[in-house]
Image (tube, rainbow, N blue to C red; front, side):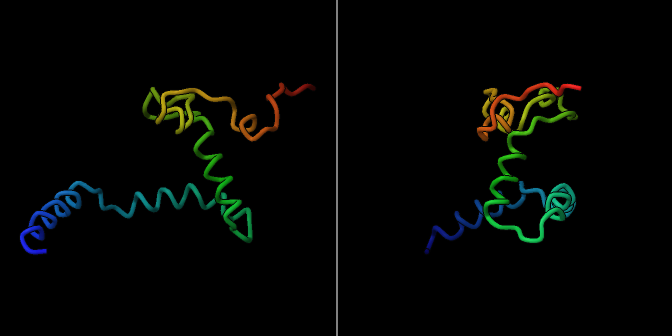
Length: 99
């Protein structure tokens, strides 16, 4: 690599210094996902894909950030709205429950 090594080493060092190193981030994610994993004995790719879709399209009920309230992670990232996640799966528009 020659002279490129030091440049690369410096770049990697800067990125590592800016990356949060905390097990609490991982534990938070694990605690949120654990409830979904205990519902199933086998976790195949189809289940994980559905879970990822659900978590990316379900709207936040509350958030510390006011701009996230009532929006899904996808809406926060793209700035574009979308229908309810069940409608996106082709299950038709949601209907109100009748007594």
